[in-house]
Amino acid sequence: MFDNLTDRLSGTLKNLKGQGRLTEANIKDALREVRMALLEADVALPVVTDFIDKVKEGALGQKVQASLNPGQAFIKVVQAELVSVMGEANEELNLRANPPAIILLAGLQGAGKTTTVAKLGRWLKLNKKKKVGVVSADVYRPAAIKQLQMLADDLDLIFFESDVSQKPVDIAVNAIEAAKKQFLDVVIVDTAGRLHVDDEMMLEIKELHAAINPIETLFVVDSMTGQDAANTAKSFDDALPLTGVVLTKADGDARGGAALSIRHITGKPIKFIGVGEKTDALESFHPDRIASRILGMGDMLSLIEEIEQKADKKKADKLARKISKGKSFDLNDLKDQLLQMQNMGGLGAMMDKLPGMGGVPQNMKDQVDDKMISRQIGVINSMTLQERRYPDLIKGSRKKRIAKGSGQELQDVNRILKQHKMMQKMMKKFSKGNMANMVRGMKSNMGGMRR
Image (cartoon, rainbow, N blue to C red; front, side, top):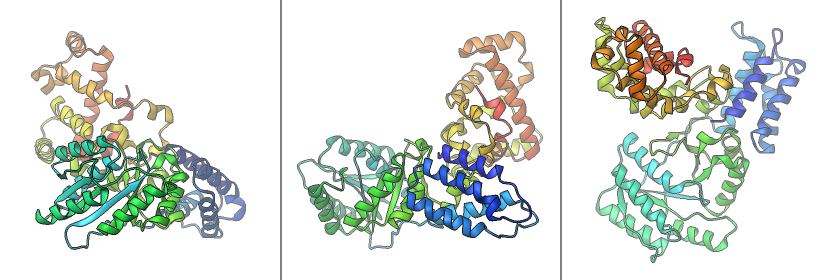
């Protein structure tokens, strides 16, 4: 996520050196590079101009603390301004309404609204313990109604039937009335994709908004459209009273222009960010955490929250007790750890949240292959129970048998055994043998994790 911007900014800030304070002379080149990095990231020009002016104002003449060099002090100023541009702090959904609280989603075609409805429903159910209903008012795309029904069934959300022969207003009003009878906390209304220049479609959503009076009206936008995302959001806000934005497909956005432009141009907060296709790939948008990621500092808070939500706590506790009793970390334990990492979206999904990943060479990042985890699990599955418990038994002929049984090369077997040794040492060091400790050691294990 935002890899290009991260690489450019990290390189620029690393090159900044000076004496005991920041001056116009020693930040001139750095400011020019930051400006170019932001423009290349497709950040809107007014945002870039304002950003550079404020960074310059904040940095000039600033005395550098004894613990910081001028480069670090400049990074601190840039980070603070990144946070400011994106909105200071996470703005939560406003659900203070007589139940059900109504959330309306709007946006262009292909932005990912229907998937976002399901993701948001799941997020509210798990994180806010809400009873959630969903309904599709997209009468122009029958597949959207069926898609939402399938997603709702998978996530155990209440789905309200709708049909293309109905009017969007009637669909939404009927769903809300049904939700009241079922004592639901939240109803999320999906709408058809539309262009802001389509007067007829914009009139339709205005009428829908007036009829149901949602407490939250969220604009769903593809982050890969860059500053156009901010301009489109502004156009929709002129027609609808938007309360926030959901940025989708951020995992495929190497630039970051949308995230850095939207708040400045629209005045509306980004409330959520979509980071993948799976229904659990939705995160609350925290400007301070995103700023840290952009500067290559990682985002351990989000990573720890994700671990707490997705890691198997029973298995983690069992492993912790085992290690604390002095028992060895074996290949069955490694397999469990790999399965948990797979459940969290794989190593690729976790990399930009690890501190210091900005310093990892791009060629090493490119070698991260999440299919590798499945192959490693396959190698372990080809071992006997005894071999998994006592990895030192695995020598020449056994290695050949395991490689053949898993459809892998001999070097793949050697690699998993080497990785196990590294993990075994790390688990002894941390003694609490859980997923969080695995994450702490992941950066040092990058060499062992390459394909």
